[in-house]
Length: 214
Image 1 (tube, helix red, strand yellow):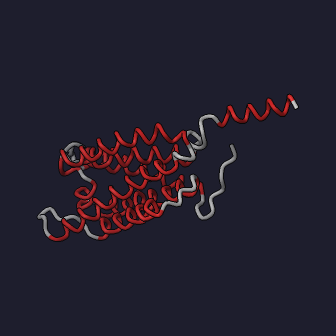
Image 2 (image 1 turned 90 degrees about the horizontal axis):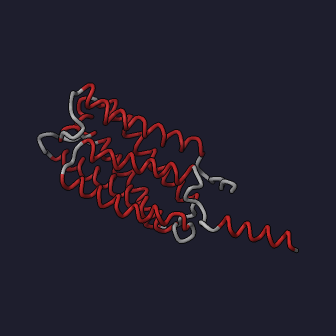
């Protein structure tokens, strides 16, 4: 199946941001905290924002990779699957706005005003990107029925993510859902695993068979 050419997004640039962001996020969360800070990824203070207080430059790179990487790849997915839903589009931009707040307003361990502004930005970033991806899959499954198993998986994924955030927010519960979403986006954007319908092959075979008979 020929790949649909994107109008405003360069494929290699989007893929670089996604793969690079995944690798950087993994190292930032799972290696920096453990190797440099000596913290367990299940420790409360192992969140990316708190680690960013000690490593502001590294956190700035993280914010660029994650904010821009998710934004352009969600846009790539919307264009590839022709998802024109306005709510999905609004969620995509809300996610980027949330990360801008997170990057510009650092958290405050004393729970001052900055803490609440930063936390609101982080919640908007996580929720908007998560629901944008889930909603895009839900809308696209109507014309791409290969999306249906992924849509059902999304229910479980979102439930586990919300439960993790509510019960124990730490480096693992914060970053594992994001990394999982990036893996999903890679397969959605750069493979044909979820593109099209499951019976496309049967339809094509039927057309070829009719052509031979005629």
